[in-house]
Length: 556
Image 1 (cartoon, helix red, strand yellow):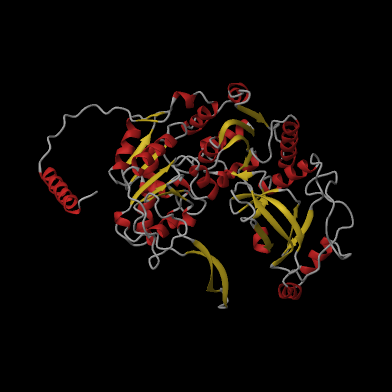
Image 2 (image 1 turned 120 degrees about the vertical axis):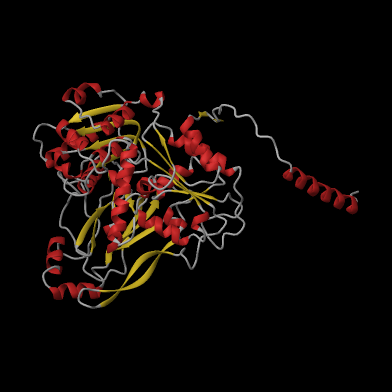
């Protein structure tokens, strides 16, 4: 049986011993060469070890590197070093996205799907979500004044975590993966939500060679000139054995590919293939050639519409909208359960979807589970008198709705005929409420039933597209086993070295590039981010930062 007095004396003796040991100077050990830190299936090089050291010392820094230089391995090692020494969260102050008991470290990225890919590689105890989820973005009604002086209201997503409602103080380390996608404006919102930003450790991991955010500049670029920066430059032999990685570094070097390169050097079955459009091929012809190519691959079981990524620079004019509709129509012909697509009116636009369609909504992939009439829609639901297609011919899709003899064309014409008609439509809910409701089931979800999404408003349909193809910008931060990248001369205005590099590095196992040599060369020769080396690109962003300060009248 324990003696309380003896236990107390033992505790006092332990405290005295600890204080004496702390007061006694310990001899400085003789420096020894740093041995590689061995982790599961992983040996770190000198630069990676430096990143682990900075992380372990609680310092903020940037970790950059091109494809094949070991950023993923470095992230694993950094987290291993951090988790062992970081405290645990004890009070999340009601933050629904941080779990009590987890390590006081957060890892995230810009998009949900990119974050999901990161989470799969992390220990379970690490907090992982998007930046928007960390800040608890939610719709709020805000007022604004129009150019005519009219005061109106609108729903706008705003962060619930801010200076008045900060993030938990126990959250001491924030790691931003794919930080080349993170804009400065969003990062500033993170700073506003931190109770002690100066005491917070920031780690920015990314590839500065990729595309910058659509709006603003990548925080990674600016932070490279402010913080210690570990640049991974060694391309591993295993990576260089991949023709995809070799092509990526060829693009970064700025060296144009010759016609011979396009025809033979990169023709590696099941790894990388380059197919060329015919000379002076027009966009319409090119689009049909792409569909024929994908259909042949579909029939040969070498194209999976839901797993493979089809990437293209544009949204419109031989872009994701037209190509996605064309792929959907092509799949209709090979779907024995196809029951026809529904023509949906949302405002002044028409949309064509069928049950089972693979769609993209707010950067997340869904399947259309159900399409039903919208009881809240008070306008005329148009009807077609015959068959129609989503795209091309012959007619494949039968219209599955409509309760009047008025055609869609007649309906849209009359609606758009006068201001009075528009006003009446707005009063009746036609312009804001869609004629049908779509129920979407998330493709990647532990509980799809509880996460089922309802689409019923004009604004919702404006953000809803087919998921069979994507722009390179939207797919940044993601990977697919097989990627089809399409670049046509009509896309020249969008093509640059960063876009081509980002596109080819989305492929994990197999890359198929459909383009022509002149188009590819044009893209390689054009740069969005100035500089040939990581240091030069960091200087470019530093100059941008100085210019922004000067514009605001601040000292540099």
